Amino acid sequence: MPAAASGAPSLPESLVLRSLRWGDFEPLVAIYYELYEERAEGHPVGIALFRHRPTRADEVDWFTRLFRATLAGEDVMVIAEVDGRAVGNCTVAPVGPLRQSETGHIGLLGVLIDRRYRGRGIGTALLARCLEECRGQFEQVRLSVHADNERAIRIYRRLGFVPCGHIPRGIKRGEGYIDEELMILDLTRWSPPSAPHKH
Ligand SMILES: CC(C)(COP(=O)(O)OP(=O)(O)OC[C@H]1O[C@@H](n2cnc3c(N)ncnc32)[C@H](O)[C@@H]1OP(=O)(O)O)[C@@H](O)C(=O)NCCC(=O)NCCS
Image (cartoon, rainbow, N blue to C red):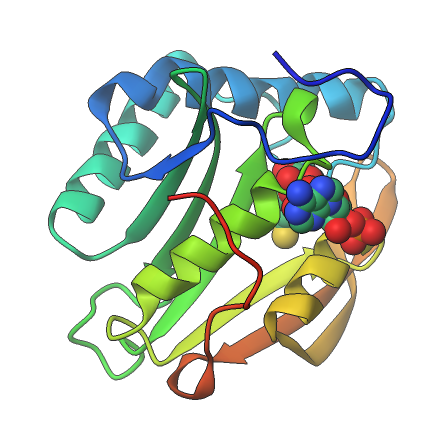
């Protein structure tokens, strides 16, 4: 479980960064489903969601496609595991339908950490590892982030992403709108951050 709230936050001792396993289905779906609860509670969830929570059957389809894509080397995915359970994931998938297309050198990044484990450095370590694994696979990594997701934007900037566009009202949530920031990272010139992270 997470460390006590007092004292400086630190990476969990048992953090492992590893590839996707079939057994990650349940924890990853649970983390994703919790975003719908966070949204219902009025928290500023930093990921675009569906209007209604997808069914478990939808999630099986998503996970199967993801598992196949990682096995095939199409997607790069790193799992953050704490105490033997997945607590987050970072995925970079080709923007186009296929790696062989003329956009196959560009990957689209998504990252999500279990809310109980945020703010302890796991997201930063996970992103850094995922980007390391993307080197040689993609030349550029893109992402879209909600303009009010300041924590995520700070992390992306620290890792070398630069803003490349702003889409007003890119997300429609209920009756309100959220602007989107677009960011890119040139992986051909990127080197991993010097701060040590867990292996
Ligand atoms: C955005 C998200 C992935 C970041 O992951 P995280 O684990 O919370 O991020 P980190 O803990 O690495 O960094 C957050 C802060 O903790 C600090 N931190 C605490 N302990 C740390 C440590 N040991 N090492 C590095 N940073 C540490 C970081 O400096 C950072 O500080 P800042 O907010 O002042 O910039 C996560 O909060 C999340 O899943 N949010 C919901 C989904 C989402 O928004 N996804 C992004 C969509 S684009």
